[in-house]
Image (cartoon, rainbow, N blue to C red):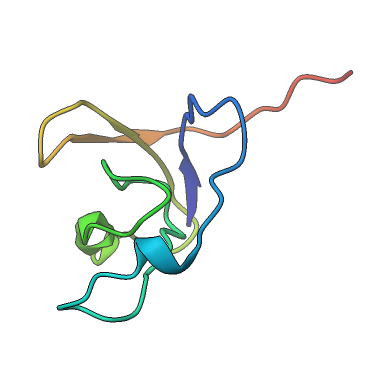
Length: 79
């Protein structure tokens, strides 16, 4: 499966010891691109559990659940 995610970040997020939650401990970094608290994981990756192999997805929306659409293909512009 492939997933198209639009990020609006304009620079890196530096992670340091202040980012460690005293109750939770470790810091989890988002790898799926869906977290509302990006670059930190907020559990949004659970929406991807039933994705099918060889299917392209686009996730949109600002609500907690968002909208998942199946798309025909991802085409990259040539530079």
